[in-house]
Image (cartoon, rainbow, N blue to C red; front, side, top):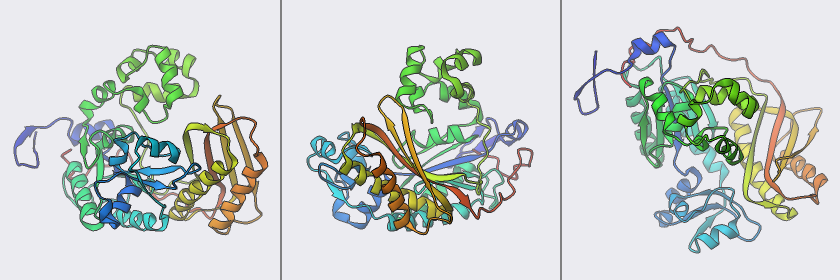
Length: 385
């Protein structure tokens, strides 16, 4: 069987739908907006285009919530202290977050996704998984669907998005980061294991800096290194992460895209580049987290009774404090007030912290899952990657 690329040239087919269907593989797109918050600011204020921009609050106690690619070139990153960001890039321009605007743009983008598939699983305001296996519009190519979505995002919002197209969520997410910004990367089923083998394990979702250090101590630096370790060895050294790592090294991920998966909680967290113990800095960071998490709560239409604050020390010990109400948290102001009250109970801290998180749980009024495409369902006319 042959396929034609976008230029109309014929190619031999690799792992077309016949094989994908037999193996229960999917056609997954991961879409990730490019420097989303900062790009919105540059779009709405043309004088900022091409200049280093940070969304956040300047000053000694400020924290960067997002950075443009021009700022990233200087080493500026999200969750970095604003003072350090300014030392790295003295010309850095700060803009206060406008989360209402970011949420509205996110709704525009999600509406575009839903024109191509009902199977959309948002991860945050700026990224989502799409399962396009069924090809509801008869476009014929997952790659083409990704291109159409990216073109519509640019035309309708003035922003750019990167996309990864593959046969599972794990590889699609890795692929979307491969050609950023404004890029597209397609990994076919026959290419998945080799693609993963060439990546550093620190790029695997769930493998943080400490995890990467632990794996490096075992001689594991890449996916190829990881694949040389059997499951028993990984379980002995990596505990609960072992099964995930074993499958990931082989390009395997059986998770489905779940458009309306039941949620147990909605939350967010920030890891700091330097440990923080200052009460005012932690309170300002908490305000930023509240804005982000409340946006996710509104997007999920979630209602919950319990607010939990998490603080993690540099030695990875974790403190949590929670407060439950007899009813759902009323609004953002109450959510923020509960979070600050919990933080106040812990101050002053016995030692600095490297991470802060805030979560809403004990959710109520959740709708049941909608039916999903089963692995055995025919893949329609989608025959091209």
